[in-house]
Image 1 (cartoon, rainbow, N blue to C red):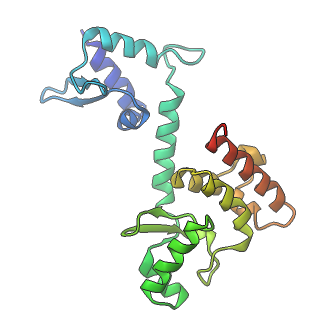
Image 2: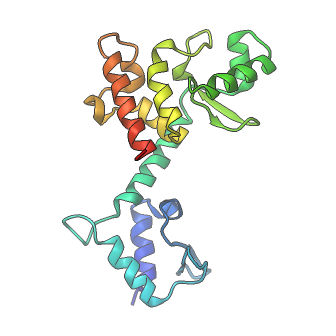
Length: 210
């Protein structure tokens, strides 16, 4: 008879969600030499007991109208964000050297520009000083920050929004904008003010209660 741990592992692998358990704060598992699932409690790093696995099973199937197929929203959100990150990494972006070539300046001058502009919340940068990704959507063909995005970027970055989440929100259809893509809508004078207001509302959610 299939154990609870194996059944859960098979189910999550079938949904392509197993790789995202840890990021969602949930227990994770590995497979032993025989293919059996070995679950680990994230709080203790110890193997999970049968009782813990039963509780995990109940929790994973507690959301939605159909408990047999329900999946925690947090896990689906993490999986979606991971998928979008992979997609975003395939879109145009620059490192120091690439942007320096576009701007026709030295790498050192470009590095200074990137971090100076990011420090005043006018440029979205992924990574640290040693290794950065600068999404190209926020730059002009000459490598300058888009002026029309400043009212949108500033509230989000000043609120401390995770850069990956900001990149996702800016480049995907947004519910707050009726399905418009924020970075594109910001370039349209008729939509720019609406986008800026939406960014402020989102920033307020990110910052939380004052």
